[in-house]
Length: 145
Picture 1 (cartoon, one colour):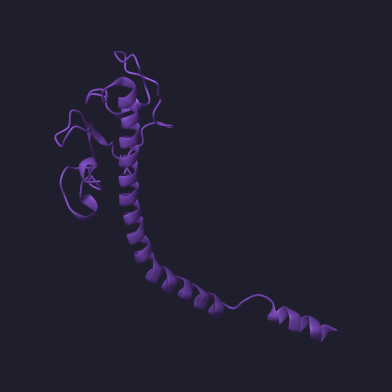
Picture 2: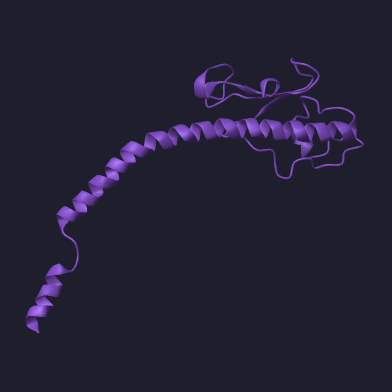
């Protein structure tokens, strides 16, 4: 009986070498997978910003149907949530939640009348939050959406 106890006690648990092997495998997995995951998160942010601009355009279209005009630059996108004082036919809120920030944490830029046609201009300035740029810093705009 003493021998069977010893055998069980000696086989219980894991060795330091086994732990090191597992940790090495996990580290290799993270080193190989993490860069690909980060690339996809950047693509997801761009897609989310484009989708949000389209949501704004839809809500602004409904706002215009009700009020006869788009919100001014001064009223901004907040007019989709909070009734402007001078508007009488407002039937909002036109957005279900507060106006979100872009996926990088910056405010969307709104301008009406816009510089690109009869619709308002809505802009997301990308990761850097500044006009211009390329790659992740490229502007996402409503007139090219």
